[in-house]
Image 1 (cartoon, one colour):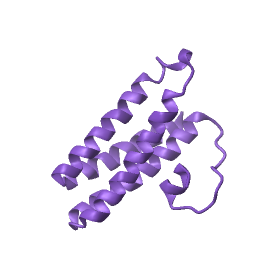
Image 2: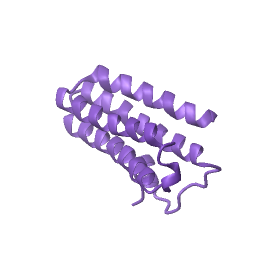
Image 3: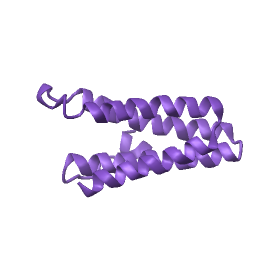
Image 4: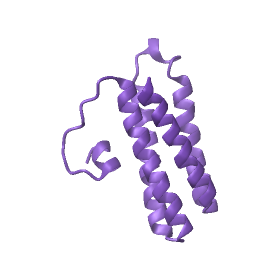
Length: 123
């Protein structure tokens, strides 16, 4: 199952066609934001298995973005450094949020990742 299917629970085999890398990044960040919102709700309701499942999906999306960035040509490495650092930071915050079962942290992350998604959509 590819990352698109995992992010959106879709059974289609083909990735959507993106006009540019910014649109693709926005798409995946939006998926991560949705999973983080589900994580917050599950944490609030103390559904720990669901919280873990949803946060794992958000982690998978951020790790997928990181994996793609690592394959970028050397000329683009500096340009994507900040985005790589952002994804790495999100991964560590998700892990901390799970350890603490912090509902507020999960809600804040969902909002911030959604803002980042909107930023890339507007570019």
